[in-house]
Length: 430
Ligand code: S3P
Image (cartoon, rainbow, N blue to C red; front, side, top):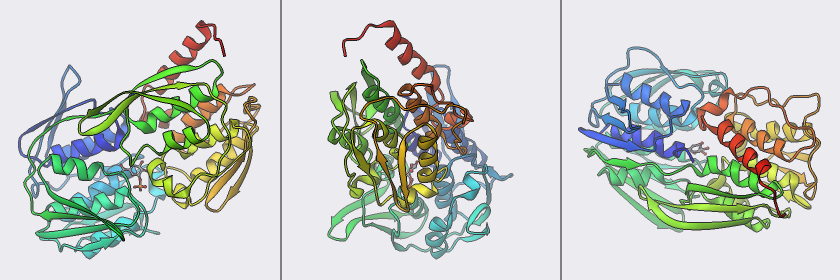
């Protein structure tokens, strides 16, 4: 599996803030992560890839970010945008952020609110969107911020602003979200404390801090592995081993839900990579049964719902999902996009305000897209999910745009082609 996108962004950002050389192996070389690299270079860091694929980052030091000479083009990447807004907010520099049509429609108010409380100034487009100008401040004011939405991006933005803010910046997280920032900041030498309480997780970071350069090994991305897990589960005869899958509990919700649906997923050779739990996953074709997905598990599989909906469309019976309003503000409105895409391929789907209800075929192939093409809306995960749906369809699925796949999984088509070829080459005993 390619490197984890969330961890790759953070490794570049923290390396770019540490004085000295950090080496990163297994970095995801997708467009989103490259947008982060370009932005950190524009603010003074040196970031180079050597011939063996190791990324060498020499940082400017916390407090040392330079004012970028040109607008920072964040492409399709919400993570780059929101985390960098946090970093810049507590530096006395001004930066403009721009992005593609998808990113320019996404809400930034969720980070503008706490970062304004810390003293940063913003001129955003209507509705708190990109393009926007951020005027950072130094010294910023430490705040205590309770997250109104379960969002690792908002949590991280406030913590990163706290790095260069004298005093203790506190984030209260009522529902746990991915904790890569906390783990990796600690590894880079930040003073960070996490307390589990009745009202949730309280995270305190003490600034100003000096980060120490580190060697980071990026584990494989569970959000990318998700497509191959579902591919193997819904394709008769499959027995697929997916190597190097990150299984941080704040990211592993899909494995649990697919297992509850009857999926045969075995964790092989569990180990640790870069301070994160990792295993290989052996996944075999399975008869899946629809379930009511517990909304409490959503944050640990927030990016995996599009492909879960594909699994549900092939399961026996009904799968109900709820509590998923956040999916409407991802790279696309993923509830409407997937309801339309799956319906267009012959599945039976009901769209609700906060989730989808999917009546599965019981393993019978979907019709496929026939004369219509799936609209991906500049959303990599819609394109990849529907490619997987195509494996379990009579007439195949055609998507209108595969370019966005390069944001997170540049070799997806190649790997999928290889797996499909291996399947046709091998007689199966299913
Ligand atoms: C991410 C957090 C999630 C996720 C995104 C990556 C991160 O977003 O959807 O793909 O790296 O922090 P939210 O935290 O906004 O839910």
